[in-house]
Structures are given as C-alpha cells and as structure tokens.
Length: 319
Image (cartoon, rainbow, N blue to C red):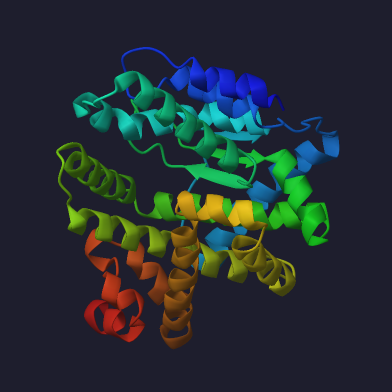
C-alpha cells in the first residue's frame, strides 16, 4: 500500500473527462494491498470442483438447466480493480458526455478520488462476483465469474470458519447468479435498460424514478433468490455461515460503516434481506418451483410492493 502514490495519482488527474480513469485505477491499486495469489494445486482444484458441484446441485435442486461462464478467474484485489474499471467507466459515459462542471480541473480531481475510493474499498471487500456484462462494449462476450482469493481467505479467518467450506459456500452463491441469468436470458437486457434510463435522466438533469425503482426491485429479486437457492442447494451445514456473513454485512468499524453508507451498501444489505424474506415465504407456501417462476418472463418480477407482500405476488402470478 502506498498512500502517497495514491494521492499523487488523484492530484495529477488530467484529460478532458469528468474522471481520469487511468489515474483512478492507479490510485485505487496504490491504496490497496493486492493480497497473495500463490494458489496451491489443492486451491485450484477446490475452486474448480466447487463451481462444478454448485452447478450440478443447482440444476438438480432448482430444476433448471444453465451453463457457468467459460471465464472463471481467481483474482487478487488489483485484478478485481482492473476487471471492474471498465464497468464503472461505461456506467459514467452518459453523464460524462453531458457534464459541464464550473471548475473542470478541480471537479476531475474530486471525481477521480471518489472513483478510486469506491474501487479500492470494494476490492478489499468483494468475495466473489458474477459479471453479467451490463453496458459492455461487446455485449456478446462471455459473462465472467470471479473470486477474490485474498478476501475469501481473510474473511474465512475473521469469521473463524474453515476456508475450504467458506470458499465452497461463496461459489454456490455466485453460481446461483449464473443460474438466474442463464434461466432468464431477458434479465441482462431488462437490468441494462433500467440502468440506461436512470443514467439518461441524471445526465439530462432530471430523474426517472420508475427506472430506479424497477432496477432496485429487480436486484432485490436477484439477490433474494440467490440467498434462498444457495442455502437450499448447499451440501453442508450453513446456518453458522449465514449468521456470520449477515453480521459482517452490518459490522465493521466506524470508517467501514461510513464507507458502506457512502457507497450505498446499506441498500445492498436491504436487498438481501427483503429479497430473501420474499422468496422464503413463496417457497414455503408453494415450493421452490413457484419461486423459480419469477424468471419465466419480465412480467413475473415482483413489484416493489409485492416484495413485502409475497401473497399478492402469488395471487397475481399464480405459478
């Protein structure tokens, strides 16, 4: 970690854009220890086996057929920053295209620092990621499945759980996302359209509240279904893992809690909680097949109100 190099990269932000993306990535990596990636043969076999077994179990339990991405990477924190920098940049493109800050030089420095902070914080906390390639320049490219190995190892130690068991549980969560997007080929386009509508509204100095509500509701369904299915498909005890990871999502020191609030991670936690409660109720009432009906077509996505009233959704969809 080199804080001075990080600050220098931010201070030297240049170019014509709202953000100097090259310097944002450099600053994020300078402020973040990459972490060890000296994988043993057992580690490599473990990740491969966990992903394969998760795929097979999820196919069996959910009764759905899907493929895992060909791109499965075990990364360190710097690799994760590099892999996600372009995603951040694509999200910001419409805003950058229309932004006219009064003090462009100062604004660029501030924005570059903000992006570096976000990338660095997330890189130090993300365990795994299924990348649906929203807003990608090449939308036909294969989706990605990433595991940030140093974080998986360190969090397992912090939670006092066996690393291989914890790694396997995380693999089940990320492969569940692959199952969702594989089962619902329309989902990527649906989410992307809501992101674009929301960003276009911001860049035009207006808001499209419906787009943001629909996006948040869809992501609540994505995360909630993953929570339900990973637990029901996982082939080991998971109650202690669920309790400890839930505590971690709301824990940390004062600076960590502030960072989570600034980055909207409290909203992410709320998505997990609301979505999991919705699907748990649906599955208990009508079975897992009823819960899986949400991915049959966009119209089956719950509304924001239905997330808190699962019986209303069941009455409307009647799977």
